Length: 179
Image (tube, rainbow, N blue to C red; front, side, top):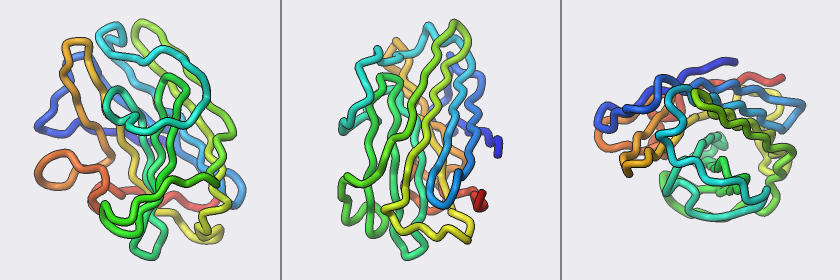
């Protein structure tokens, strides 16, 4: 499924024209994502490639994110950095009960950086999260984009009223059907 992210109205982006995300479920419990950021990529802070490794606070600079509701009032958050670093968290409720998900498997992470395009693709193995294999997953997709002048824009499928908040239920704006 091809989806488009929109910038939050309070955080316009000068350097970015669009962010498109291809999202699909693979098998019973994998989430495949391909983010394509289009614009003047030279004006963005794109973290240098470090390695595929776990790290916290990736959202403090350019970071691409996915959220999956668990159907029980909680949700899961996945952060992907162009550096190769990533994170997976679980929440029992709105910004409550945060834990790191050690059981999430990053099956692939690839990036491509050009003058007018940044592409980051990843597949996450979510089989240990207990998500329903036979029902749609309610998801949110988002991005934090930092420009070289320090300006940040916040992109999502949908934005809740007020300041940018990817954790808000309004941001979970897509039903991703089983493969």
